[in-house]
Length: 437
Ligand SMILES: Cc1cc2nc3c(=O)[nH]c(=O)nc-3n(C[C@H](O)[C@H](O)[C@H](O)COP(=O)(O)OP(=O)(O)OC[C@H]3O[C@@H](n4cnc5c(N)ncnc54)[C@H](O)[C@@H]3O)c2cc1C
Image (cartoon, rainbow, N blue to C red):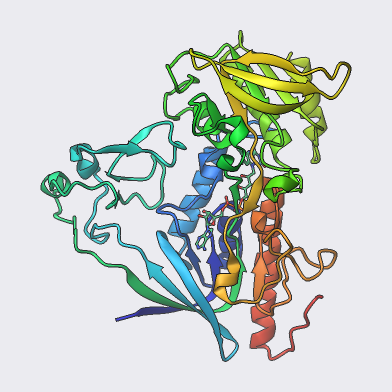
């Protein structure tokens, strides 16, 4: 039987934008259902080390918001759940959601972790961007919310060790996906972003060379509770002496369909370089860049601070990366200033600053929200409201609109919450809602 609930606002996506929008709507007295496809709320921000330009701890900012959402009396959270379709019925939105099976009884689970301890199967850990391992049944990460384990059937060997170790007998290998229907007066789309797949830039060797890593993997290396507890290079556990950042490694490149600037890459590379020089004071850190785009409040000063710290900035294009027998990387570069003769430079760890692409193809929801040529959703008129779309009752927030930093995502989210609440109030009072386009 299909479970069904009714709320004022449906929020899709629980990154910082979805969390903020949900809290702002609920704090004004309206009910919210937040649907997240991952097993935990928190989005990308919960996996970051620190944030630019303040270098505040990312999880110290995100975790309290995650906890407030999960404990809020007016917010219902549905994790590990996928919105299949949304249809309009008498002015409301009806979302068909599939709750994916975790293969545990959530009502009985006490999050003791005995199942995880007993499981003999180790697999690459997605939260650590493949740098560490997790068990085939595991709680997604230390401060995940909710703290329920997920049994990954792709890797499960059906040995039954988890079921024998569970004191509450809540492992259920036969659990099935369950349908849920959410009826809402308004919808906020906060489906965020993904990074450009590095396999399309084959010349950089990610996936082939173990010491070429993504910027999100570097965030995990720098996080205090990261995979190794300190910065080590993946191939041999050596402390790296020489680290390179390759900027625009998946953006400003028409050949891969991402001709636009991903906005945050310059700043996150500078942030990571500053953090690395704190953890590895003797390491040589070089950023290979085309232009530095330090666009926000205090960002230019942050960049200057990095230059003063002796982080090297080289204006050069990296044509390709090769690897030697010791898994050191050779960057084939062409400087954009002074001599332009091709050069080869050796580093023992390389971080690729990937670009930003849409996190979800919202056309599958049939909501008719306009998207730009790259798939990001757009407000009807950015000058009048950053979150009102041309589809009445549907609002958009955060990186789902295009590459943006956390402060801009939070501002967007609060705007979407205010607009959604105003819309519901105007519907209740019978006033005609004027589209701001
Ligand atoms: C390496 C790196 C470092 C960064 N460092 C900083 C920094 O220091 N400071 C800063 O300001 N910014 C930084 N950023 C940018 C920052 O990550 C984003 O601004 C912010 O995370 C955007 O939040 P969001 O909620 O819009 O998106 P996301 O965090 O992507 O959240 C979207 C959520 O929606 C979920 N979702 C997607 N589709 C669906 C669906 N169909 N159904 C249900 N759920 C769905 C996703 O699973 C995800 O949880 C960094 C980015 C990168 C790549």
